[in-house]
Amino acid sequence: MRKFLMVFLFLIVSQIVLSQKMITLQECESQFLKNNLTLLAAQFNIDASKAATMQAKIWDNPTISGDVNFYNPENGNYFDVGKQGQKAFGIQQLIYMGGKKRNGIKLAQTGEKIAEFQFADLLRTLKLQLRKSFYNAYFISKNIETSDKQIIHIEDLINNYTIQTAKGNVPLKELVRLQSLFLNIKNERMDLYNSLMDEQANLKLFLATNETIIPKMTESELSKYTKDIAFNAIEFEKTALANRPDYLAKQKAIEANEWNVKLQKSLAIPDVTLGGSYDQHAGAFNDQKNINLSLPLPLWNKNKGNIKLSQAILEQSKFDEQNFHLQIQSEISSSWNKWSEARKNYLKISPSTKSDFETVYNGILLNFQKRNISLLEFTDFMESYNQGNIQLNEIMKKLAISAEELNSTITKELF
Image 1 (tube, rainbow, N blue to C red):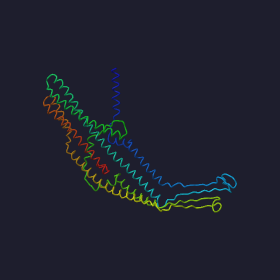
Image 2: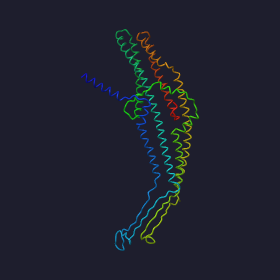
Image 3: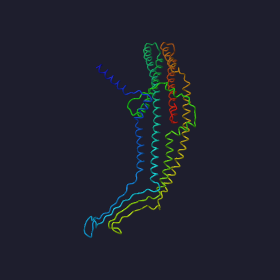
Image 4: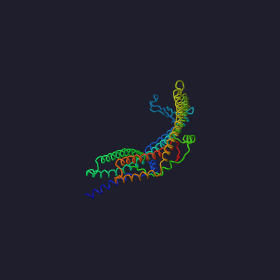
């Protein structure tokens, strides 16, 4: 029974390990590009817009008509279509006038470009969200590691203090103080764990996987985000406007609306229906061959409403583009300030800070176990140590995320 239980536990542990996957940011992005369902679905928008362009190039099918005799009362024959009978045939083709076909094609082609820009912007947005979730998950995990280490040490102390309290060697209030510290750290760990689950759920969704993603990186990788970059608002704006797919989509929307105005104006011009017909006996003379020409008279419907509507949409899109231009300028300034401040905070951290934290932590723990320091000093330090590590990881996380936001805003890998 014991052997069976050990095998069972081994299988459970193995399954848990196999369901986890340590992955670097580069590996994460590679899997994201291959598997992300949102991106795969969005690609169909491009296919749909290409299909719309294809359809816009196709002319309407010609219309063919026929008229054959059903009953000839003179000779009593049905379907008398012979030499002395009657039959007539015609064919017609709609000819677009005023550049309708060309305008429709140009409008569809512009819509195709807009779909491509929208896809590129979706990729840019999702890529930034992926990187944010990656860094959030990584640094939350580091905070949990710190909490777990403290919990193990404090739990050992509580067990020892419980024994000594029962013997009357230690006051009960000291045991309660340790238990309070233990519960406080456990509660903070639970909050961290819940945040980690949210970020891991995001990563699973991004990568379309059921595996638990464990971000893997070294703190030295953060050094690339401390690169000294001079702020050049004009150059950054120029780069963003030339490469931001959401802004390029706004410009293409103006172009699309311009083509739509032209299309609506051309729709006011009547189209011509051209055709030919043959009539065996019912015409002015036998075997009559005719050319047919028809067009609607533009008396009441001159498409004025749609023309005005398309012009209003065009003007609206121009103001929208100008407003978005200003928004990009604001985003560049804001993203730069966030990264610059995060960089300053990070560079103020001494390279030995983390090792100093650990050295002091081990010293405090050892001295408390030897009763060289008071319980109050120990618990105060533990709380400060826990918060200090969380704040240290928060500074590093903000540096990475703010740098990635700056990259995304300018649409250029600055780091």
